[in-house]
Amino acid sequence: MMDYLKYCLVLNLVLSSVSYAAPVAGRRLIKRKMQPHINVLIGKELESVLISGFDLKRKFHTNKSTKQFKGRKSIKFNCLGFANKNIGRLNKPLLLASLKSGTGLLTVNRNKYQGELLVVASHNESSCDLINQVPLESYLSSLLAKEMNSSWHVEALKAQAVAARSYAIHKIESQQVSRGYGYDVFYDLESSEKHQVAGSFLDTTRKTEFATRSTRGEVLVDNRGKLKPIFFHASCGGKTLKPSQVWANKVYGYKGVPCRYCLTNKKRRWNKEISQKRFNGFLRWAKRKGHLKKSLSVGQKSWSQVRIASDRFRNRQIRMYLGRKQFIIEKNHLRRYFGRVVMPSNFFKFVKTKHGYFAKGQGNGHGVGMCQVGAFALARRGWGYKKILAHYFPNFRLKKNY
Image (tube, rainbow, N blue to C red):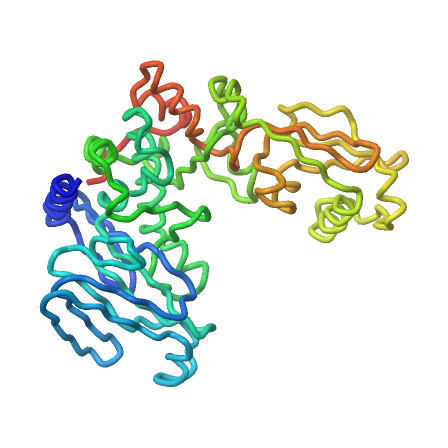
């Protein structure tokens, strides 16, 4: 195990030596044929941060002081009220410190990270955020074990590497997260289901490293050569969806495609019951959001008289009747309101029961882009990663970004 860890560390250090290290603040631009670094939020609203490693180099960005430590060293940051006591009330995040290790590895909560760790003071909380700045290919090698499964067929892992790389570079180039806040938050994406779940150095395996290295720099672009957000999910339930069918935004180039291998996965089937009271709450919410006709009554008694038209899995809308009035609800609104625990996917059949409502569904996730279970099944049937990606993204093509 230790020999392999040494192999991974040496290999990733060599790969990162030819990469482009983006600055910790301000805009981070992608240079052609140069591997970018990515800033990943790995800890949010922390009361304290303990970072350890060998031959640490610590830099305080508030006073631009730098200190080098020999041997093993642990450095703790107490974040509660730090900004208010030492700097004053902040109106945006502040980069406090950055740390590097002479060995290339830093430890936080028993997890080892490559690259550099940034400690950032939150502007509206007495806490700190922890950010890992790491070469993109190293980030992807560990991510594959979290977003997919490191034991899966290598062609499925390659497809996942391309999809995750495309998503990550789009976040870097568009500065989407910082633009959303209106100021620099010092990271490109979060390590969470909101964006992508990143791993640590020890999550990298020979197979995930090989899948990443074999597709190095490859991304998906639309037929106009433009980089777009490339989405993926666990299991679609039988057919993938377009972004506009799930979220409010449209993304040029997407197309829903059948995924019959995912459809046969019985472990991805689910059943959920929703009480009349909870469904009434959903209807009131839907009306406030403008998803229902304003003329419809919102009384408790009236909503209990709602009738549901015959539904099918493939339907993306639910037809309901209140008296003679018909109104239509998008199924993704139900998942948006009840959440992923109650409604694991957007692929379900909805019926009314004596005591409430019943959803019988298939799949897990939003259903947009590449179905991971489907990609695994296709890889086992001999499909290469390029053919897998072409199936789920028929209007996109591969491009070498660096």
